[in-house]
Image (cartoon, rainbow, N blue to C red; front, side):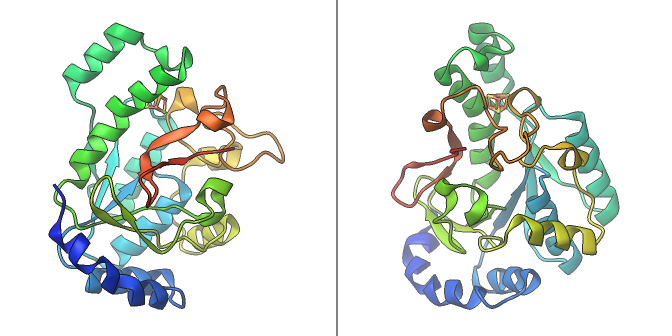
Length: 251
Ligand code: SF4
């Protein structure tokens, strides 16, 4: 459901966007929480950026809902860092799952690993396992916090501190928009934040197990996601640009 706050106040967030640039991560999140009324949701897939954000939110005790999408196809290491994170901060991270009837119909129609057969099958799997659960996770929220960084790929180079998700009618907050990977790693290590052990084995961007591989030396950060697809087809259903296009996950 589209929150009226978005259309009424988006333009007034310009000053907030500008103010965030000079702030630490902690102060960015505090400023966002103070500026935006209503429910704010942080989605985590337990990648290193999300772990940095979780650490800040939990340590500061901010009233921000931290949720995850359990696709059912995650790596064992991802479930481990999920449990480790809950133990470290004594917090439960709410999980959203695929609708069982939609998933059963999808598997019946495409097979358990049907996503390798075509881009359409892959998108259908992502829709059932990720996009629809995300919609429920964000239902009623005013703002959505993500771990997007502008330097992750050319397609994400326009990622800003604050943007608008027109499809979902949400304000999108990207507190790490101007961080690079070494800055994130340094932050996580300085605060002894739990992180996915796959990051030490060549997996920089971690999604579902059958759709993620380790990188070869020199490969771009997101090259290990849906590596069998042609680059121009590597679109994600979760992130939508301000003009309504899907954000491409180009390698
Ligand atoms: S990343 Fe792969 S397994 Fe996960 S939802 Fe998308 S197609 Fe399905």
